[in-house]
Length: 121
Image (cartoon, rainbow, N blue to C red; front, side):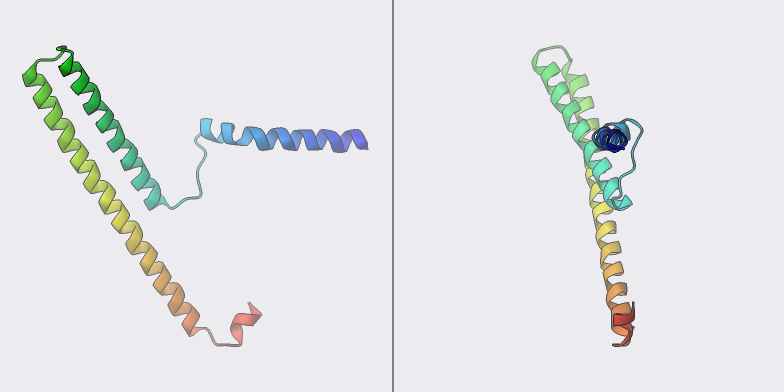
């Protein structure tokens, strides 16, 4: 019996330690808000564009890129970063509006509930 309990404890510990790695590898779904997840994804995409801009600047300063190409690519990257910034702002505003609406509905429901009914639930 002791061996069985110890074996179960070991399996539980291994599963607990391995779960984050398994979830990351297999696309584990977070329990977060989809609007916030979208905002985070757009922020990561914008960070990648900024990294591309830094790499482009390094190439230009090392004389590995022509000035015309550098300016054209830098302009395109800036436009893309601005678009992503607008998308991130829109996602944040949408998430905030949804949160305000849900809070208002919850407050409205709580106000409509009779005083004696809250204790029964």
